Length: 131
View 1: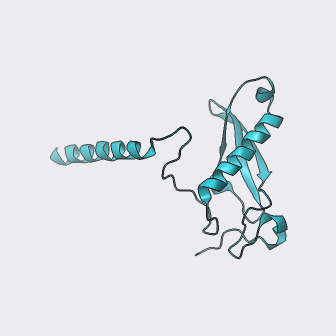
View 2: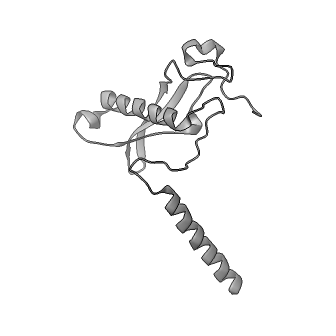
View 3: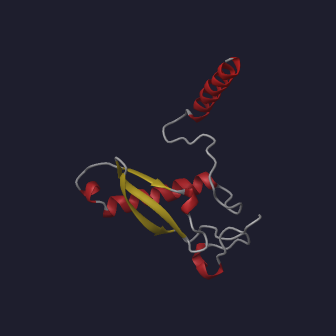
């Protein structure tokens, strides 16, 4: 019984600690780790840029945006394809349903460890395993 109580208290303390770390300004991601390759030197900056592109796409192509309705957008850092210079954008997120589209990465996005960029997609290698 004592072991169960100790584990429960540890779980509550860990949850409280986790909540405290993620609080901040609206839109702040705190220490949220992003799954980008090491050659992406500013992962948060890239993620925010891709989210902005996703929002712009939603505004141009979404029926709900044309009707004045707002909806959430999201990107998936695990679905950014640096070899093909594309990323996955979700929008019109509502009660488990959403629209999605694959969008191109900006031309100046790094796509390899030797300063390759998406401006020359043929030289892109994406993530290098083991690095």
